[in-house]
Structure formats: structure tokens, C-alpha cells
Length: 148
Image (tube, rainbow, N blue to C red; front, side, top):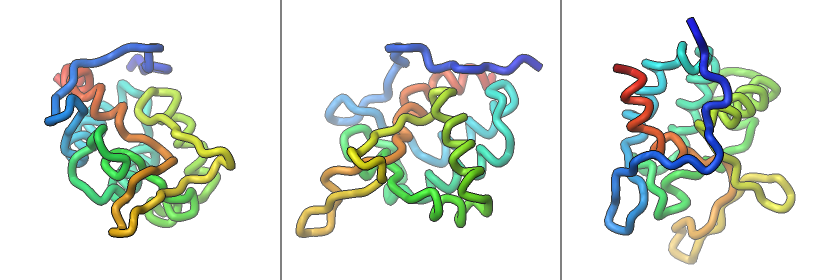
């Protein structure tokens, strides 16, 4: 079966499901399910799916939402992701690189390369760096077509 390598076209935009402010909102578990259904054409192994599931589980909201950093940024450390996915830290690093190269994730880097979240006095996240799951929501219509 042919695999799709580097399917993140530079500057490409998919159709978007609008939220109130023009952002993207898609249920995180529906996104995972469609990726599970097309993992072979994407060239993903079960470990990548497990890692993606771990990242999604760290999001506090059910919708991958572009209007809020806590709606699409996974700022868990590689060690936390490794523990939740039951793999080594090196495996996490390798599979994150694979997911980024396929355009399923993007990195929002901080100056020191760490993932973190800044919270306001009420505890709400106002700024975060880490791994953005927004490309999954942006490309959801494309993934659904692939699954069909």
C-alpha cells in the first residue's frame, strides 16, 4: 500500500468548521478516530497513534479549538507523554518528529525549547507553548475523504 509522506503542503489551507470567532473546533476524539482509520495510508504505526492519543488526553477541553491555547496545545513533557503512552522518551521524540513531518502536529516553540503554559490569576491558560493539534482539526475534511 502506498504511504503518504510529508503530506503537509506549505501554506495549504483546508476547509474549516467555524466557531463563533472564525476558529476551528472539532471533537478531539473524532479526530483521533479518523486518524486511526487512515493510519496505514499515512504510514503511521500503532505507537504513533498511542502517542497521539496521549497528547489528546492532555487537552482539558473536548474540542480542538484555535481560539484558545488550552484548546489545541499539548504542553506535556516528553517524559509525561512517554509514561502515558507506555513508551520510552526516545520513542516519543521519534514519533513526534514523524507526526510533525506528516503535518498532523506543529510545534510552537519557546525560547528555551520547553513546553509550558502561563496561567492567569483564575488558573486559566492564557499562553502556551508545545505541540499544537490544530492541524488535525484543519485537515479533518481531508482525512474524512481519505477514510471513505
